[in-house]
Amino acid sequence: MISFHCPIQPNEHIFSWLNRVHLLSGNAKLTHTLQYLSIENKPFKSCNHNQAFLDAVNFFKNKIADDTSAFDGHSPLALWSLSYSYNKFNDWRISNKNTMPSGHEVTQFSFKSNWQYCPCCVQDDIRRCGHSTWHVKHQLPSVSHCYIHQTKLVGDPHYLLDLRKSLLPQVHDFSPPHLEDEALLLEWSLFVFTIYDRLNNNPALGQTLTNRIRRYLSIPDEIKRSDNDIFKSLQEQFDNDVPLSLCRHLFLFYKKSFKRKVTVLKSTLGFSFYKKYKHPVYWLIILYWLKDKISLEDT
Ligand SMILES: [Zn+2]
Image: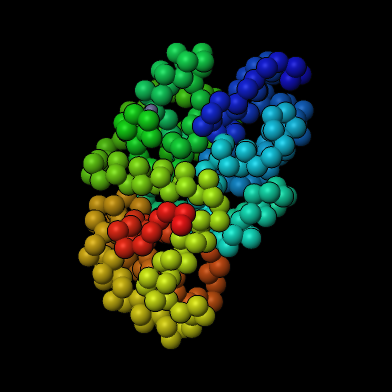
């Protein structure tokens, strides 16, 4: 098996490539392919750094390139350089030994974490190489539009949660979602793509950006419980500046009034006995809020 040629496409998610390897193998069941390739039969989630992902990266390193290109170019994980210190993040990226917690907050996020595709890209990909692929940038958390066509992404929160059953995008025909403010969500998606590209080019930028946020907002280096009072007025400013429809797109505690307990700034930057890291979406919305105040460039 695996004597055939199955190159990974530029911008293709590593699990998309694995699905195509399986389809070409002729095995009826994915479990047989995974067993043969020594890949653990765990969910193929777009942003989960689980054992199936680590095994897929090892397979990639054996078959395609023994470097960090699977992690960098074929997964959305560059965004997680915002959530962790550079040393910690880079160790996950380079060693490919331990799994990194995704920090996905199912009970707090409004956006879904299912796989998404762009119907225009499906047609373009088929014309270009004969089949469609699951693009990495369509899977970045909370994006709603295509980075190429700027059209709405399509998916289904039930059927497209785990790519082990979802084959290639071309077999699906879901309807585009209704979005509260399309123009704003397109702008947001383009913002996330820009940050993702920059973090991919320079993984150390994640920590640099979060440090710039702290400095601009005058957050103490060693934050104490009593410092949490500073977030009250900052959060008021944030809520004033960031469009509510964008906050509603990201967080359930803006969408459902009874849930409104969490504050974005305090839970991301404040003192906590439990918190060790925060999902990149929290950092991205803070960067979006401050995009005209701090530099988002490498230098
Ligand atoms: Zn597209």
